[in-house]
Length: 418
Ligand SMILES: Cc1ncc(COP(=O)(O)O)c(C=O)c1O
Image (cartoon, rainbow, N blue to C red; front, side, top):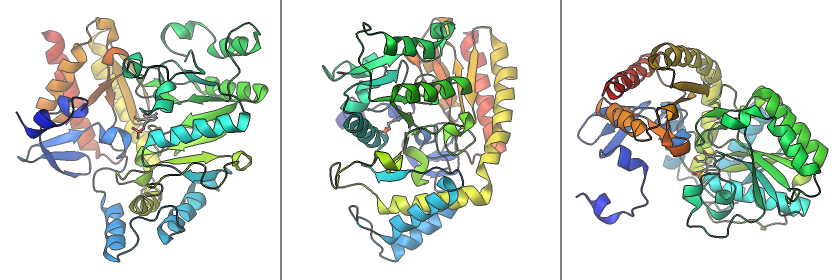
């Protein structure tokens, strides 16, 4: 037994599916200490959109470190933060006419979700929040309360007060107009469900099984929030930063959420960082009312500013479109054709292969284990883990993307033949 199995808590998760000792990584490849190379279709669960150790970003980070520049600065005004903010506004927000304030939250995505929920409740003076069935927003108590997965909530007793889950347009719920349903709930004085301060949603439910919200649905959701004076919070932690083909995933619906949450790939280099954006009139925080020691990781600011430069230089969103077309065609031609029970869903560079209809939730485990033996890291997700989620770095080279896809095909053929 290794030291991890002996000493690390039982709560460890990803490592169980990929039992190698990893040491080095470059681009879309990750290497074990003994030298095996694995193609990475997990990309730090979405934190490595620009690949491992991206050279452009690395150079900026190294120069910063070499200059003995500030590595921890609380929320001081620093040159690193200035660089990031200027770049963020110049390259992203101003060109999109997005007028947001920026709040730097604690290091991980869930910290920004907590801040959003707290601020929304404070603004509207209402405790309620609506979330969506299948949604995932993190593991701290507030974020957990708005996440759908009952298994991960099981031990956190009594923490879901004032949260109600509405149907997301998927599965059986596709048979109803889910926005009309929410409208009816809000209009029914006997619904038993209080009007919320905010509705939090993902444009693509990633952990929920790669479920892509239709454009019209998002537009209707925006209108519903306006009609009822409810704040709309877009959790763009996993599918923001270019993953769906535009920097913000809600751009494809041409809507403007009241609040937007970013984390994972915003720092560009896998450094912890999270942001909450909100309309200026919502900035009713008192100084220090939502504080924290590790808000604004300086190296993350440098990485993030460099990542924004890199995405412009490389026109990365155009690349996403090209790779999206390849992936879609591959998955339809080579994987969906295996059986009627295989369903393909996705957008940009997040795709799911849903095999729930086989009625065997161990099948995805067999497939990803075989993929790993063949040199590919790919995870499963969704209800009962029945969806294989393809989430490569956006920078992945075409031959490596193709190779990874053929490994999935081989693993499917072998595991379904058994
Ligand atoms: C949509 C979404 N929200 C929130 C989170 C939580 O982020 P973190 O794990 O950094 O706390 C995740 C993580 O997977 C996520 O995908």
